[in-house]
Image 1: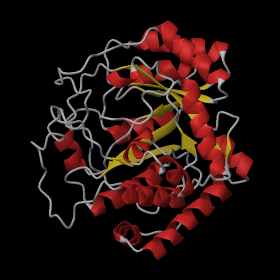
Image 2 (image 1 turned 90 degrees about the vertical axis):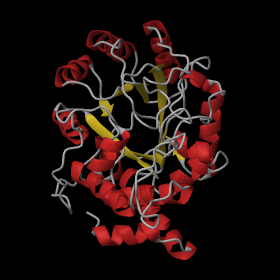
Image 3 (image 1 turned 90 degrees about the horizontal axis):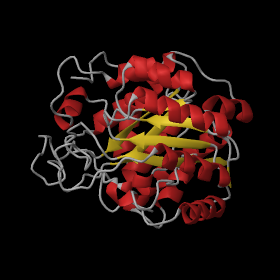
Image 4 (image 1 turned 45 degrees about the horizontal axis):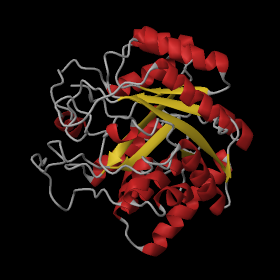
Length: 372
């Protein structure tokens, strides 16, 4: 296990000199190569619904936003996207949505079961905070992974950007532990540069990845939708300007690199949000500082502009075929190759000859609730 203390992580997060950062990125890339190999796994993203009952202060899908057109995909459309994933050589589909109450436990279980019966794909679900009963049903139906971003390990900041939650609301860190207990591969992640987010908070995020022993770690820049309290500038959590962590491209790269060093065998994507803030090299650079996954969009093109988590998202006009060709070209341009399997964490560990490290985490999680 990498021995990086919280103070060392903080030093790296504040580091801006080119030479030391080049060394950090080279170290992370070497850990990536040794631990999970040179394959870049393509996970086909299907954004099945833009309905959401939450009021997150940065997300364009928030229920209070009446200025966007909502949609839900049909079961037939979702299954057609899964067939496209197979045709394009992907190993996984990621079924994602806002927290939409119309996506019932039974309906999702039927879709998962159909995909597992008719394709060789792994299925990742990303449907928000769900009950143990729902999670158990979807696991029984065949779902392999569940992704629930906790956004920030700072409990006070979490409550500030997720209003209207009671004190007994679900705790996302507890849900992630439950997800692992149910036999899923568990994915979490954070945004970088949230107003009110400190450098120390980001350092704790990295340690939280390690403490949770996450199988998947998503790290992207904070990009708020303009039709939200944070995006419009109406809400600004108080923080000393010197403590505010920037949502810069460089800060995202540092977070990816540190996550790779502390969590060597995790799957870490180079995200669409990173490609959005730098369309020329963002995604490719993410792969060169520790990431090993990309997520091409399989959502039908007519729906993509409606999934407005944030504006001007990369690749919303590209067909699934064009997106696939573009990403494969980017992967080969950095002397890596597209993965040909489902790319589960256990599989990567075996293939790289690395045993999973089940040792106690370097720093224990703070025992604060993130739900209320």
